[in-house]
Image (cartoon, rainbow, N blue to C red):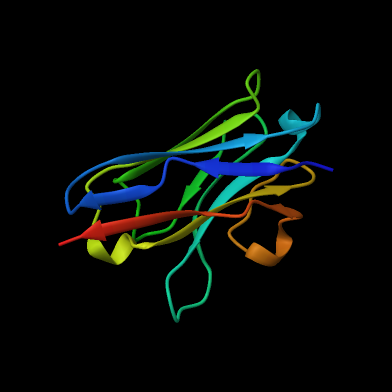
Length: 124
């Protein structure tokens, strides 16, 4: 079992930056792949980014590539999402997720554990 707690969301103007953090409990954090997903009001949850257990493999959705950077610190049981050049369409609740096995995917249903989410609001 792993528990995930996101933080770092907030209100920011278009063009601004936020750094989202996901803190994980448990001693097996380094064995999980980690992902970030988001859900805007009235829309389905969508993939944002993912990282392998070692940090050596990363994936990004096309709509955030070049603006967002995912990273992890296994010693601190933390995964980060640095979000730059934010746009109003990035407004959503952002969720951190963990996948057993260490291989990242873009599919939400393949993740085993989820945090409660952190709200990101980008004003125009």
